[in-house]
Length: 255
Image (cartoon, rainbow, N blue to C red; front, side, top):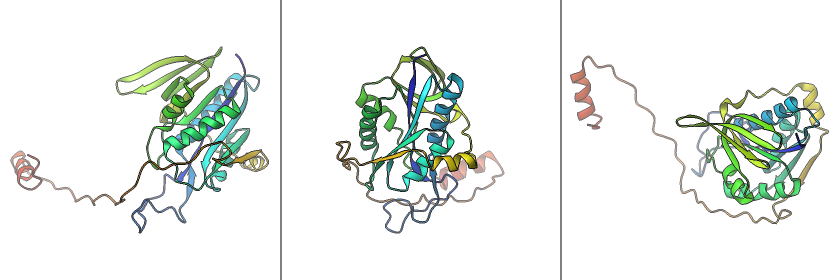
């Protein structure tokens, strides 16, 4: 098997255990003084890169590079990826609100510089649920893509991925380089050990700006208003089918 360099995208998001609240300006969710962590799908992407190295050996997977686009605090997320097992990191520093196309353009320039054989991304981020960046990146690079991966195998310069689709599972194969986006059932991410957390502080982390990459960040979407969903009313127990039909017809007015 030829040597692989794997690039893994990671995003800093509000922790999945946090109960999100709409901010007072109703422009989005409250992020100040709220715990953040790595996007869970991106944790799976980092884990899969590490497992490919463990399976094929360090001679086969020569380097794992983590990359994140965002503010200074995104470096905390990159350090987590380094503690899990990535070798070095690239931080595209920007305080702008990033939409999927902007992220894909930034990542495409990082790919051009790093020249990876494989790019692994989470299928979506839990803050916007866009599920677009991986596909857009593949389009910009004109690379093959395998999305919603639940099993990954690399051998002899080719990639085989089992995908989760509506009808079940689909197996696809492609040549490298390629893009993979990870689904939940691909693996169970490991916890970084304390020694590895300490070692991660000394691993190289390079910072660049969108301008360094020749990308101008543009906003193509405008959020008009963000509101919380209406509170759900309590359920009712009915004594008969006739009573159920009556309530559906006269109270809920769905019949």
